[in-house]
Image 1 (cartoon, rainbow, N blue to C red):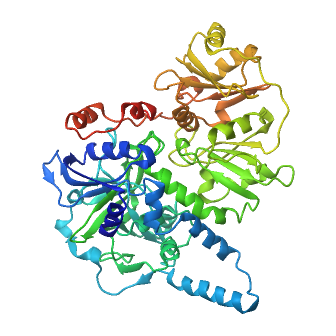
Image 2 (image 1 turned 30 degrees about the vertical axis):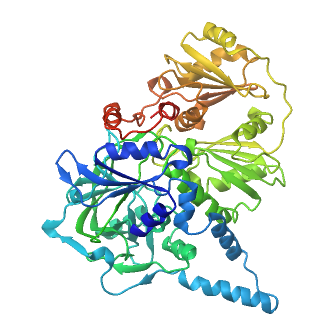
Length: 604
């Protein structure tokens, strides 16, 4: 990490904080606010780290927000993400060379590929300069952060989790949150769809314990590689070699058969008893909600090793925008060529960060035949991590840029009718809280690759329309209309809910002359004039199979929190919110420098 710190410092992308700060809430709150500043703020190096509960002072600093801007991402990659995508495209479309010049070019390209494969070294690595075994093992010697007040405990959030299949033929590098239970036990939050979970099943079937090695730090690319959406069985460290043109150099763990990069800052080794599960969570996650308590595998730590001069790497998740906005941007650009192998007429796609990535994808395509967009919907919902996407909107290649939200929204709303919608069911991310059951729920596809001729509704000002709406539904508190110059204006209605939103919608259908798309949200915790956070709320809260309904040209969307009124029997999680007393303490000490208007905009 020291090399990365010097690089960020040289490029004025690092802010060093020397104030004494607590691993419980204080450090995470500062990092959470920093990434929401213009251009992602700065990477943060906390040099005076303490655990106020125990009085412990840590020797090592904590580094956060390293990927938290487009510029920092490319600095850490050492090249533009477009150049990586172009290289992958070239490899995917490699053809037999014609003539001497092409043969020389291909030979040079293939020669550079020799370095993509990780290289195993003999002996110990830098990451094994300090060794803790047996009674010396103590996870509380690491400055592991507790991010949110309702979290079940401290969590490692930037851990590189190295596992292998039972036969040892396949290795995997993933990133999962890791709860510290005590000095030598960690919770393994690998979800049922993840590669490590598949390996776990193999060990469980064989009745054997599963080895795991967790690395923290080192070259930041190792951490990004842990998030790379590669096919099952493909070693994620191949991406490190492809990007840097140098092989990842690995050394063997001391107490497991797994190999880890020699230059990481920490390694936590251990074994998972496949017959034992333990309640994990709650945890304030990147959805902006807490994920609730559930049983997950537990690792018993067999060794902790580190460099002598080490840095603890961490991130913070919650409401958008977050550091994963920029990591996801890089991932999307780099892996677009691979996505095109299953959807060749896709010309662009974008996952807005305020929809939590998997909640909404915008896709642009060259439409060649009837039903083409629906074919792509099925392709998306059947491919790797794309299968977790809940809502997908497809436009033709004449549409505005997918990142020009105002122009794109106008384009979509002027072409939309309810018959553009396709609702089905599929698998969901384990973090999704809105579906009637875990892991499976509604999917919404919208095909606006072709225009549909409809007339715009009649217009009323907000106060006039509110009066009409409240005459039908007294539970309505307020409303605000968006995109009123389009053929499908969006009316967002806040309610103090005493009935289901579906009942409200059906009651309001006589007003179809004035309303087209009607979105219901709770009156509490929602600002009708904050579209950024309304998108976050609604895309998180809806299950398409339950919460979208139509009447003629009207479409209803239920973005409220669900309860028994909706037939919802699961526990509904709380929002992730900062702790006011922590922020007030940071302000009084002159450490909190986040603007109040941004605090309100991002609903911290």
